[in-house]
Image 1 (cartoon, rainbow, N blue to C red):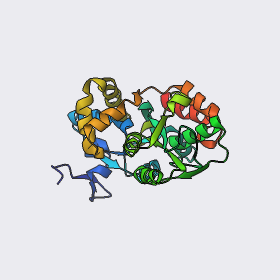
Image 2 (image 1 turned 120 degrees about the horizontal axis):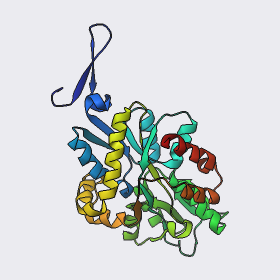
Image 3 (image 1 turned 90 degrees about the vertical axis):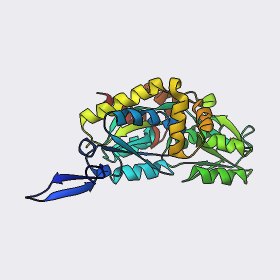
Image 4 (image 1 turned 90 degrees about the horizontal axis):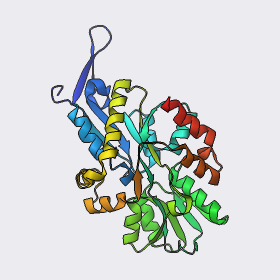
Amino acid sequence: MERRGVVVRTRGPGKTLVVRLSKYADPDRGKTISIGLVPSVEYLPVSLMMKKLKEQGFRVEISLKRSVLEVAAGYIRGEFHVAFLPIYTLAVMRQLGIGFRIIGAVGLGGASLVGHRVFNRDFDKIFTSTLSTMEVLATAYSKVYGLHNVFMTYYRDPSEVVETISSDNRSAAVLWEPYTLIAEARNLKRIPLSNILGDYHCCLLIARDSVSYDLADRIMKAHIESIEMLRRNMERASQIFSKIIGLEPPIIARASAEYRYTHYIDRRLLRNIASYVRSPLTNIEVLEDLISRDNN
Protein backbone atom coordinates (compact mmCIF):
# COMPACT_ATOMS: atom_id res chain seq x y z
CA MET A 1 0.00 0.00 0.00
CA GLU A 2 2.86 2.36 0.74
CA ARG A 3 4.56 1.58 -2.59
CA ARG A 4 1.28 2.23 -4.40
CA GLY A 5 0.93 5.58 -2.63
CA VAL A 6 -2.22 4.66 -0.71
CA VAL A 7 -0.72 5.16 2.77
CA VAL A 8 2.20 7.05 4.27
CA ARG A 9 4.15 6.03 7.38
CA THR A 10 5.79 8.67 9.57
CA ARG A 11 7.71 8.41 12.81
CA GLY A 12 5.53 8.71 15.91
CA PRO A 13 6.37 8.89 19.64
CA GLY A 14 9.16 6.54 20.71
CA LYS A 15 9.42 3.55 18.39
CA THR A 16 5.92 3.88 16.96
CA LEU A 17 4.95 4.64 13.39
CA VAL A 18 1.89 6.67 12.37
CA VAL A 19 0.06 5.40 9.28
CA ARG A 20 -2.14 7.83 7.36
CA LEU A 21 -4.01 7.71 4.08
CA SER A 22 -1.87 9.66 1.62
CA LYS A 23 -4.57 12.22 0.87
CA TYR A 24 -4.54 13.33 4.52
CA ALA A 25 -0.77 13.43 4.83
CA ASP A 26 1.62 16.28 4.18
CA PRO A 27 1.54 16.39 0.36
CA ASP A 28 5.33 16.76 0.24
CA ARG A 29 5.48 13.39 1.97
CA GLY A 30 2.35 11.66 0.68
CA LYS A 31 2.67 13.02 -2.87
CA THR A 32 -1.12 13.47 -2.97
CA ILE A 33 -2.74 16.90 -3.32
CA SER A 34 -6.44 17.04 -2.45
CA ILE A 35 -8.47 19.86 -4.05
CA GLY A 36 -11.96 20.96 -2.99
CA LEU A 37 -14.28 22.68 -5.46
CA VAL A 38 -17.85 23.00 -6.72
CA PRO A 39 -18.88 22.12 -10.31
CA SER A 40 -17.93 25.37 -12.05
CA VAL A 41 -16.39 25.94 -15.48
CA GLU A 42 -14.40 28.76 -13.88
CA TYR A 43 -12.11 26.00 -12.63
CA LEU A 44 -11.45 24.58 -16.09
CA PRO A 45 -7.69 25.34 -15.85
CA VAL A 46 -7.42 22.82 -12.99
CA SER A 47 -7.54 20.04 -15.60
CA LEU A 48 -4.24 21.26 -17.03
CA MET A 49 -2.80 22.05 -13.61
CA MET A 50 -3.39 18.43 -12.57
CA LYS A 51 -1.31 17.23 -15.53
CA LYS A 52 1.54 19.56 -14.64
CA LEU A 53 1.59 18.43 -11.01
CA LYS A 54 1.41 14.79 -12.09
CA GLU A 55 4.56 15.36 -14.15
CA GLN A 56 6.24 16.43 -10.89
CA GLY A 57 5.30 13.16 -9.19
CA PHE A 58 2.09 14.24 -7.43
CA ARG A 59 -1.31 12.60 -7.54
CA VAL A 60 -4.21 15.09 -7.53
CA GLU A 61 -7.56 14.11 -6.01
CA ILE A 62 -10.62 16.25 -6.72
CA SER A 63 -13.38 16.45 -4.10
CA LEU A 64 -16.57 17.81 -5.66
CA LYS A 65 -19.10 19.56 -3.39
CA ARG A 66 -22.55 21.03 -4.03
CA SER A 67 -21.91 24.49 -2.56
CA VAL A 68 -19.09 26.82 -1.58
CA LEU A 69 -20.15 26.46 2.05
CA GLU A 70 -19.52 22.71 1.79
CA VAL A 71 -16.09 23.40 0.29
CA ALA A 72 -15.33 25.90 3.06
CA ALA A 73 -16.47 23.44 5.74
CA GLY A 74 -14.36 20.68 4.20
CA TYR A 75 -11.34 22.96 4.09
CA ILE A 76 -11.80 23.91 7.74
CA ARG A 77 -12.08 20.22 8.69
CA GLY A 78 -8.79 19.53 6.93
CA GLU A 79 -10.18 17.51 4.02
CA PHE A 80 -8.30 19.49 1.35
CA HIS A 81 -4.79 20.82 0.88
CA VAL A 82 -6.01 23.25 -1.77
CA ALA A 83 -9.44 24.71 -2.51
CA PHE A 84 -11.27 27.08 -4.85
CA LEU A 85 -13.44 29.53 -2.90
CA PRO A 86 -15.06 32.93 -3.57
CA ILE A 87 -13.02 35.91 -2.44
CA TYR A 88 -15.99 37.05 -0.31
CA THR A 89 -16.16 33.69 1.48
CA LEU A 90 -12.42 33.95 2.12
CA ALA A 91 -12.84 37.42 3.63
CA VAL A 92 -15.22 35.93 6.21
CA MET A 93 -12.87 33.00 6.87
CA ARG A 94 -9.92 35.36 7.40
CA GLN A 95 -11.96 37.43 9.86
CA LEU A 96 -12.71 34.21 11.76
CA GLY A 97 -9.00 33.44 12.02
CA ILE A 98 -8.96 30.54 9.56
CA GLY A 99 -5.55 30.31 7.94
CA PHE A 100 -4.79 29.98 4.23
CA ARG A 101 -2.47 31.33 1.56
CA ILE A 102 -3.79 32.75 -1.70
CA ILE A 103 -2.35 31.11 -4.80
CA GLY A 104 -4.12 33.33 -7.32
CA ALA A 105 -7.33 34.29 -9.08
CA VAL A 106 -9.06 32.06 -11.61
CA GLY A 107 -11.54 33.94 -13.77
CA LEU A 108 -13.66 37.03 -14.24
CA GLY A 109 -17.41 36.97 -14.85
CA GLY A 110 -19.42 33.81 -15.46
CA ALA A 111 -22.58 34.51 -13.44
CA SER A 112 -26.03 35.31 -14.83
CA LEU A 113 -29.48 36.11 -13.56
CA VAL A 114 -31.81 33.42 -14.93
CA GLY A 115 -35.57 32.98 -14.89
CA HIS A 116 -38.69 33.26 -17.01
CA ARG A 117 -39.17 37.03 -16.55
CA VAL A 118 -35.71 38.47 -15.96
CA PHE A 119 -35.82 40.91 -18.88
CA ASN A 120 -38.73 42.89 -17.46
CA ARG A 121 -37.73 42.19 -13.82
CA ASP A 122 -41.16 40.73 -13.13
CA PHE A 123 -40.24 38.42 -10.25
CA ASP A 124 -40.49 38.61 -6.48
CA LYS A 125 -37.81 36.15 -5.37
CA ILE A 126 -34.09 35.71 -6.17
CA PHE A 127 -32.32 32.49 -5.27
CA THR A 128 -28.61 32.72 -4.51
CA SER A 129 -25.90 30.76 -2.71
CA THR A 130 -24.86 31.75 0.81
CA LEU A 131 -21.76 33.88 1.64
CA SER A 132 -20.66 33.82 -1.98
CA THR A 133 -20.07 35.91 -5.08
CA MET A 134 -23.58 34.95 -6.19
CA GLU A 135 -25.02 36.58 -3.06
CA VAL A 136 -22.98 39.74 -3.63
CA LEU A 137 -24.04 39.94 -7.28
CA ALA A 138 -27.71 39.36 -6.45
CA THR A 139 -27.56 42.18 -3.90
CA ALA A 140 -25.77 44.49 -6.35
CA TYR A 141 -28.33 43.77 -9.07
CA SER A 142 -31.19 44.52 -6.68
CA LYS A 143 -29.56 47.82 -5.67
CA VAL A 144 -29.00 48.91 -9.28
CA TYR A 145 -32.69 48.44 -10.16
CA GLY A 146 -34.15 49.37 -6.78
CA LEU A 147 -35.79 45.98 -6.25
CA HIS A 148 -36.58 46.61 -2.58
CA ASN A 149 -39.52 44.21 -2.49
CA VAL A 150 -37.72 41.25 -4.02
CA PHE A 151 -37.05 38.56 -1.43
CA MET A 152 -33.62 36.88 -1.45
CA THR A 153 -33.46 33.21 -0.50
CA TYR A 154 -30.67 30.66 -0.56
CA TYR A 155 -30.00 27.39 -2.34
CA ARG A 156 -27.51 24.63 -1.58
CA ASP A 157 -27.60 22.79 -4.88
CA PRO A 158 -27.63 24.77 -8.17
CA SER A 159 -29.10 21.81 -10.07
CA GLU A 160 -32.11 21.78 -7.77
CA VAL A 161 -32.72 25.52 -8.06
CA VAL A 162 -32.82 25.25 -11.87
CA GLU A 163 -35.70 22.82 -11.40
CA THR A 164 -37.38 25.21 -8.94
CA ILE A 165 -37.28 28.33 -11.12
CA SER A 166 -38.28 26.31 -14.20
CA SER A 167 -41.67 25.69 -12.59
CA ASP A 168 -41.99 29.07 -10.82
CA ASN A 169 -42.58 32.06 -13.10
CA ARG A 170 -42.24 34.49 -10.19
CA SER A 171 -38.68 33.56 -9.23
CA ALA A 172 -35.15 34.03 -10.58
CA ALA A 173 -31.69 32.84 -9.56
CA VAL A 174 -28.09 33.97 -9.80
CA LEU A 175 -26.13 31.01 -11.15
CA TRP A 176 -22.67 30.32 -12.49
CA GLU A 177 -21.61 28.32 -15.52
CA PRO A 178 -22.48 25.67 -16.59
CA TYR A 179 -25.82 26.00 -14.76
CA THR A 180 -26.91 29.06 -16.74
CA LEU A 181 -26.50 27.05 -19.95
CA ILE A 182 -28.45 24.21 -18.36
CA ALA A 183 -31.16 26.73 -17.44
CA GLU A 184 -31.25 28.05 -21.02
CA ALA A 185 -31.83 24.50 -22.23
CA ARG A 186 -34.95 24.54 -20.01
CA ASN A 187 -36.20 27.62 -21.89
CA LEU A 188 -35.22 30.05 -19.12
CA LYS A 189 -33.86 33.49 -19.99
CA ARG A 190 -30.51 34.76 -18.76
CA ILE A 191 -28.77 38.09 -18.32
CA PRO A 192 -24.97 37.97 -17.82
CA LEU A 193 -24.37 40.16 -14.79
CA SER A 194 -21.10 41.48 -16.21
CA ASN A 195 -23.30 43.33 -18.73
CA ILE A 196 -24.76 45.31 -15.82
CA LEU A 197 -22.02 45.41 -13.19
CA GLY A 198 -18.85 45.12 -15.28
CA ASP A 199 -16.10 42.55 -14.72
CA TYR A 200 -15.78 41.00 -11.28
CA HIS A 201 -13.69 38.41 -9.50
CA CYS A 202 -15.36 35.29 -8.21
CA CYS A 203 -13.03 32.62 -6.82
CA LEU A 204 -9.45 32.34 -5.69
CA LEU A 205 -7.24 29.28 -5.37
CA ILE A 206 -5.93 28.87 -1.81
CA ALA A 207 -3.58 26.49 -0.02
CA ARG A 208 -3.45 25.44 3.61
CA ASP A 209 -0.83 27.06 5.84
CA SER A 210 0.60 23.57 6.39
CA VAL A 211 1.46 23.27 2.69
CA SER A 212 5.17 24.09 2.38
CA TYR A 213 6.20 27.29 0.62
CA ASP A 214 8.06 25.22 -1.96
CA LEU A 215 4.98 23.19 -2.83
CA ALA A 216 2.73 26.28 -2.77
CA ASP A 217 5.10 27.89 -5.27
CA ARG A 218 4.94 24.78 -7.47
CA ILE A 219 1.15 24.84 -7.38
CA MET A 220 1.15 28.56 -8.16
CA LYS A 221 3.46 28.09 -11.13
CA ALA A 222 1.34 25.19 -12.44
CA HIS A 223 -1.82 27.27 -11.93
CA ILE A 224 -0.45 30.29 -13.81
CA GLU A 225 0.90 28.20 -16.67
CA SER A 226 -2.40 26.34 -16.95
CA ILE A 227 -4.35 29.58 -17.34
CA GLU A 228 -1.87 30.91 -19.89
CA MET A 229 -2.08 27.77 -22.04
CA LEU A 230 -5.82 27.13 -21.63
CA ARG A 231 -7.06 28.69 -24.88
CA ARG A 232 -4.52 26.71 -26.91
CA ASN A 233 -5.60 23.49 -25.19
CA MET A 234 -9.34 24.01 -24.78
CA GLU A 235 -10.35 20.70 -26.32
CA ARG A 236 -8.02 18.66 -24.13
CA ALA A 237 -8.89 20.66 -20.99
CA SER A 238 -12.63 20.24 -21.66
CA GLN A 239 -12.22 16.47 -22.09
CA ILE A 240 -10.41 16.12 -18.75
CA PHE A 241 -12.78 18.48 -16.93
CA SER A 242 -15.75 16.60 -18.38
CA LYS A 243 -14.75 13.56 -16.36
CA ILE A 244 -14.46 15.66 -13.21
CA ILE A 245 -17.88 17.35 -13.25
CA GLY A 246 -19.83 14.94 -15.46
CA LEU A 247 -20.77 17.22 -18.37
CA GLU A 248 -20.07 16.80 -22.07
CA PRO A 249 -16.93 18.60 -23.37
CA PRO A 250 -18.85 20.80 -25.89
CA ILE A 251 -20.98 22.22 -23.05
CA ILE A 252 -17.86 22.97 -21.02
CA ALA A 253 -16.12 24.64 -23.97
CA ARG A 254 -19.20 26.79 -24.65
CA ALA A 255 -19.59 27.76 -20.99
CA SER A 256 -15.91 28.74 -20.77
CA ALA A 257 -16.59 31.62 -23.19
CA GLU A 258 -18.46 33.37 -20.34
CA TYR A 259 -15.22 33.68 -18.35
CA ARG A 260 -12.06 35.70 -18.83
CA TYR A 261 -9.38 33.58 -17.18
CA THR A 262 -6.68 35.36 -15.22
CA HIS A 263 -4.50 34.61 -12.19
CA TYR A 264 -4.10 38.32 -11.43
CA ILE A 265 -6.27 39.93 -8.71
CA ASP A 266 -7.44 43.38 -9.82
CA ARG A 267 -8.20 45.70 -6.89
CA ARG A 268 -10.21 48.03 -9.11
CA LEU A 269 -12.76 45.30 -9.75
CA LEU A 270 -13.13 44.65 -6.02
CA ARG A 271 -13.71 48.37 -5.41
CA ASN A 272 -16.27 48.50 -8.21
CA ILE A 273 -18.43 45.72 -6.76
CA ALA A 274 -17.99 47.17 -3.25
CA SER A 275 -19.41 50.45 -4.57
CA TYR A 276 -22.71 48.68 -5.30
CA VAL A 277 -22.97 46.66 -2.10
CA ARG A 278 -22.23 47.69 1.47
CA SER A 279 -22.11 44.56 3.58
CA PRO A 280 -19.62 42.52 5.64
CA LEU A 281 -18.90 40.47 2.50
CA THR A 282 -17.83 43.53 0.50
CA ASN A 283 -15.94 45.55 3.11
CA ILE A 284 -13.22 46.92 0.84
CA GLU A 285 -10.71 47.35 3.68
CA VAL A 286 -11.06 43.66 4.55
CA LEU A 287 -10.84 42.58 0.91
CA GLU A 288 -7.76 44.67 0.19
CA ASP A 289 -6.07 43.50 3.39
CA LEU A 290 -6.88 39.93 2.37
CA ILE A 291 -5.03 40.15 -0.93
CA SER A 292 -2.28 42.50 0.33
CA ARG A 293 -1.11 40.13 3.07
CA ASP A 294 -0.97 37.18 0.69
CA ASN A 295 0.76 39.09 -2.09
CA ASN A 296 3.58 40.43 0.13
